Length: 73
Image 1: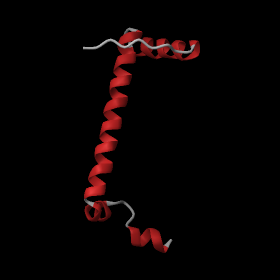
Image 2: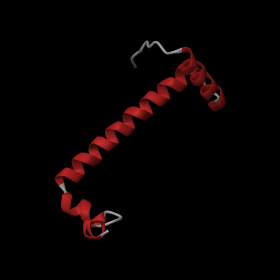
Image 3: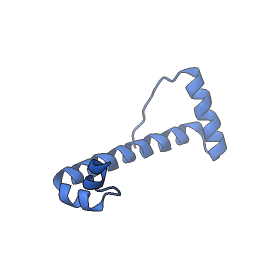
Image 4: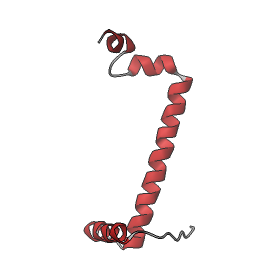
């Protein structure tokens, strides 16, 4: 596990501490959880973009609004 030191504006630090308290965890743990979740979300979106780029036909067939319907609108 790695340690990361960051500087936060006071208002962000206060919000982080309030959110951590609401979650019942120390602020440092809460910040780590949020950073990890953010990175996992970014990796998921990157993978989704790559999948769509590699399989545009499948992405089109499974879209909520097919291109033909979007184009007609």
